[in-house]
Amino acid sequence: MRLNRVLSIVRLALIPGFSLLLCPGLASAQSVPMDTPIKHVVILLKENRSFDEYFGKFPGANGATQGKISTGQIITLGQTPDKLPYDLGHGWADTHKAIDNGKMDKFDLVSKGTVNGVMMGYTQMDQSSIPNYWSYAQHFALGDAMFSSLAGPSFGNHLYTIGAQSAGVIGIPNGGPNWGCDAPANSRVLVMNTNGVLSRQYPCFELQTLGDLLSTAGISWLYYAPTQGTPGYQWNTMDAVKHIRTGPLWTTNVVPVAQFAADAAAGTLPTVSWLISANAEHPPASTCGGENWSVKTINALMQGPDWDSTVFFLLWDDFGGFYDHVPPPTLDIYGLGPRVPLLIISPWVKQGTVVHTQYEFSSMLKFVEKIFGLPALTQRDAQAADMLDAFDFTQQPLAPLVLSPRVCP
Image 1 (spheres, rainbow, N blue to C red):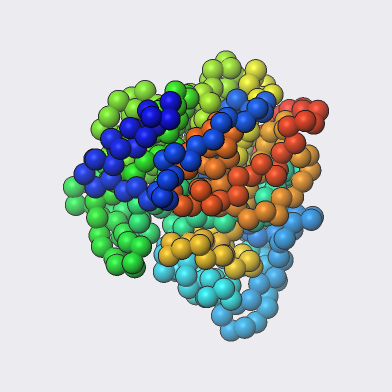
Image 2 (cartoon, rainbow, N blue to C red; image 1 turned 120 degrees about the horizontal axis):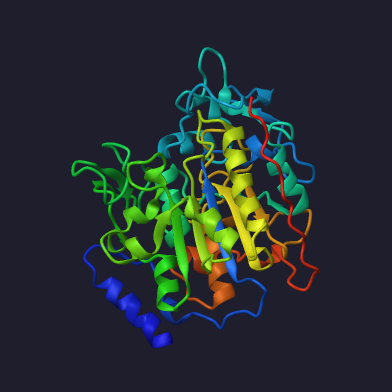
């Protein structure tokens, strides 16, 4: 098995343009699988919310209800409406502007950060706004130190969730709704190498993914996502990995998002799943509508036979322009970015816990690698916290928490 994994990495490295940011000796750094009840890991990635915007008022969490603006004034965070009138700036430049070298005081200066005197980024929700997300946080675990991997927008952060790197991507592709290898021929995305040199490249890259490691090890996985021509397809990030988009894995392992609920109910979930939805709470879309979709999806898992052996990570891909008071640590030239909400839902998570450990998206990959005995992909997942401190595999497993979708405003 070890030889097969190394040969797989060598084959991928021979692909033109392949980006492999491995540590020395990383390809042989796998361990034996852990003896745990975990047989399924699900990663649900949603859009554009900061920790303080969703859970700044959550008891016991490192949250804020006030924030500093660019004038130095401290203001009370207002109430985020269910549907925002516009999207807030959260690209590479806006993210660094908001962070302001750790001062966290210029969220009002990002694009549309202040419109007609309204600073929409300095608003937040409370328990009445997202009651079911709060119920999950109260019953399972909430992470208040999950940082986005890239100090920038969605595309690169989504790549981190599959490959512990962004292939240098720091921007969003232009040229239409398709962001990956299905993008128009004239589409380009801003890429920065590790020396800070910028270029514009076609948004179709070669990088080794966790899916590749799983396939080599004979471990099942699926990427549930919107299909081409439907809303949300731009977040189907496997489309940006050339050997997946143009190879057999695109047909066998990238499947319609609607299939997840059916697989969960039938007890046919793969070992590792990524779950991408068009109902992602990306402003200006309804938060309530996105929460309802999450609840229906999680209910399907909880009411199916795989609940007792599953970990469900629910998180958001970037801060979306919303205020957060915690300065992101600097790991490398790409990040980290501002905090995002993290819910860990499992019968084996420590009940009612706020986890203060520093995580980033590569931590979820590290968790899978530790549980199933896989090597690291890059320096990021090699060094990331493995998230095991949120679990107690000896406890009495927690019961499902089946919730009801609510009527949206």
